Image (cartoon, rainbow, N blue to C red; front, top):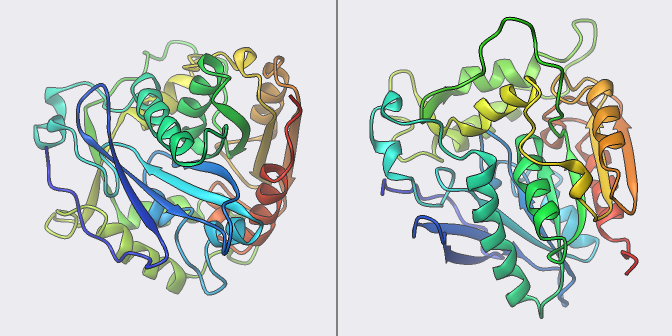
Length: 322
């Protein structure tokens, strides 16, 4: 097991550790309850490259996404998958990347997510748990929702990955166990989908603060040359496989209400992707697709984050019909 990093803790948080049933390694969950009450629980499921502290719990001048959800009366939980944030690192993360296949594919991640959901239920009087996901996080979340519909109340899929027609004559995507992502690579990714004639939706100064914390999310992040964060490569490989027609779950098995939320400039969750997913969730009792202007795949950290926060809080706060 590789060493996990430390990070500045929000004094309002509860911290929970549970055991991944498959590996015996430790999973980290953070919880922030609404003031003076215990609201309906949801669990945040992060994407392919950064953990919960850098996404739902990251605080901009007006607070965090999680703060907004708590103000709406929701009980906010967030999971770090193995290999991310304050959860344990898999032993293969300490071996050469090429020595093992991609870590943290959706089948593996769904087992970790199930353990987390069952812990949240046990901590909240057995209530069903809603899932709030970003990007690749929609894959393990929907896989779990399809196999255990009794556990899941509602699903918000922010920038979800959809199946696409496979390109001709291109090999099936594969990769090593892990990869290293630099702050510059993140910046390039943050700004690549903003049209050239539009003003920025994220300032460089805001990003620099985020990037400093990002590098600190890996205990060895600043010791590398160049500095960078080691993450499991399974999510990245699985996104590419979805774009080769291999989505790791069957959307038709999902029974819970589903709300797709995406930015108008999101190149990873396009209009065509959203249409495909919306049509594929045939078993869902309530399907919605919401597009927000001037947002990219990282809208939760951008100028239009407030609209995303408000829309997700509204859907998660609704009552699901029995």
